[in-house]
Length: 239
Image (cartoon, rainbow, N blue to C red; front, side):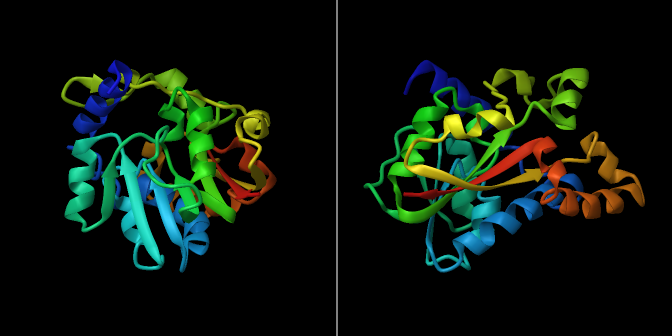
C-alpha cells in the first residue's frame, strides 16, 4: 500500500471509532435519507457495489432490497463495523477494484470520491465493473454551496484522537466540471443536490428550524437550487 493510501486508511481507522455516533438522527440521518432516495430505486433487485462503504450504514439499508450487495473500503477499522453488520465487504481501493468487468448492475459511492486524488481512475474503475445499461450514482463535493462556505469559515473539524478533517485529502468539483470527470463509458442522466439550504449542521438541532430544514432540503434536492447542494449526487448510465 502506498504512503498516501496508508495515511488515508489510518485517518478512517481513527474516524471509525466515532463515525456512527451522530448518524442515527438529525442532520446526518437527513443526509442518509436523501441519498437513499436516489440509491434505493436503482438498487432494488440488482447486483450492487458500494465504493467506500465505510461502516456499512447505507449498505445495510441496500442489502435487503438488492439481489446482491457488496462493498469495498480502504479502512480495516471501518470494515470491522461493516462486518459486524453482517455485510459482504472487501478491503481494497476504489482505484483498483478486485472484480471482473461488467460484474454489477448498480455501483454507488457516497462521501468518498472527494477524498480520492486520482478520481478519474476511480470513475473509470466504477464504469469498468458496471454492466452495459447499468447505472452508477457518484457523490461529489460542491464548492458552489453553503457547506463549502461553512468549511472555509469554521475550518477543519475534529474527528477523534487528535485528528481533524485537514488530515485527509479533500477535493471540491464545480458542477460544470462533472461531464469532464466522467469517463466516456458513462452518460450523465441526472444530478440531485443534497444539503442545499442547511447553513451549518448544528441548525438541525434547533427546534422547529430542524424540521423545516428537512422538508426544505427534500424539496431543494430536485429543484433548480440543487446545483448549490453541498453534495452533488450524479446518476449516469453505462453505455
